[in-house]
Image 1 (cartoon, rainbow, N blue to C red):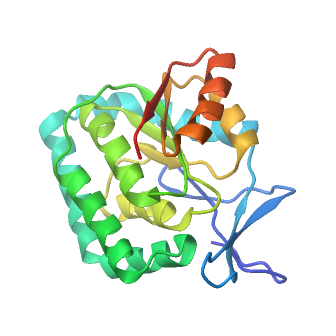
Image 2 (cartoon, one colour):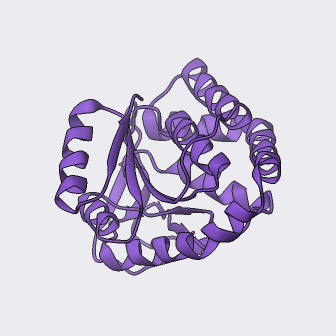
Length: 232
């Protein structure tokens, strides 16, 4: 992560197993809803950054699929164990970004751990995932776990309002020795979403508020991408 001399810490993208620093003109400032404090910034990325993230996912997906389901379940199990181990840290990130109280933050982390440990099997491919700020960590885990179990590779675009816990989970995959490129993170807002829809993803999945989901679905439809909306 890089620090700006005139503002809070900037959270980068995560691409191909490492932090991906990019130079963007604009940043979104993440503020604590309870205090109004500016706590972090995220780059507002676009088409070129989306292409980098999707290329990494495309390169990683065949080998991830060939690993076999038992091996992928082991990877998800290790990730869930590490998330559980650092539950306090993730809860703090959720409290800062989303204004969750202690009980809400702990429940959010527990739901994410359970989703990773109990994953069913979904559809494979290269999948774009878009999240809102309502349940950023649990929604992320619940959406990606079945796809990962099936052998999919992921590019996630979290809400710029609540990026921290999602970034930390993508970073944690590297500490758990996951293959690079299986899970990637694209920061940004609508330009990043449009850029993602302009790539060779197999489908776009949105998890969150239905009203925002309708906007996301319209962008996916205009780009000719299969779209799915799941409940937050």
